[in-house]
Image (cartoon, rainbow, N blue to C red; front, side, top):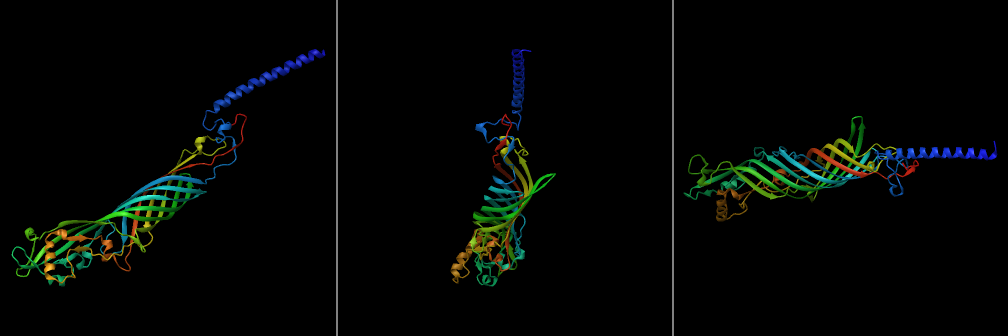
Length: 390
């Protein structure tokens, strides 16, 4: 074989190999481009360096920062050991919070700020209280002093003693709070999903509110010149079971010397749902960077210190000046007793009934909470990619 013929045959072989390689290259390229349309196989170029595929420089470790919010609500009351004051029926409490969480492994730290409202009904058993708290004679809580100032019937001028008794007392407190929670949590993972427990404290400051006191009053007259007790005689001002309502300022709960301050212990447990978060792999898409967590839980909040207002008010205030010794002034004031509007009522927790060395009041709420948190996982850099930048 001549030297020229050998050169021609060698050239044809090289050309055919090159042509076969070019066709194989084109086929593989189309296949990879089709795969790129599937989630988890996105192309990467110089302008999309954050959308790293292939082998990454780091993997998700469970640490990160989260922002979100929560709403909660449940049954609420004031727990107390005050004689005659009941904690039921209680009422409701609800709040909304903006949250920040830092996660490190299975642990997390939660804080934030929120606004809450509480509406609690506190019944008072008058029969369990001293008689002079809810029974009045001629406008005086002191029976002996009241008997020394009899009233005059404006119709016939007869002297008599007017007795007022109160029953079915029920006090309502409506408070508005600014809230600061600080909690520590721990994840409990299992085949059934991801649960968690959380312990901590919450600082509440009552910046507004009101109180409403309700009672039923009955008045009767005991005449010195007649036999028996006269009641249900409307034109003489003797009425039975008259409903009274009085509105007052907010309940002045206090921690130490700071009015409106309360610190509650917090315990919470529930289940967490993860969404928009794929299992970390060597290949991922941008959508996998979003971490959204939904939680449904139950919780208990309870005041750690005593928040009793330690008030000195009377349970019922009358427009009678008991220190006044002028009979004419007292008689003029007593005329107002025919109209039941002469009575004012103070929330029981602000009165002398609740002021005792060993008496305490604590806020208590049990309910459910819904929380949603968002985070962007740290961007990962592709350090080993295939020729098509996957």
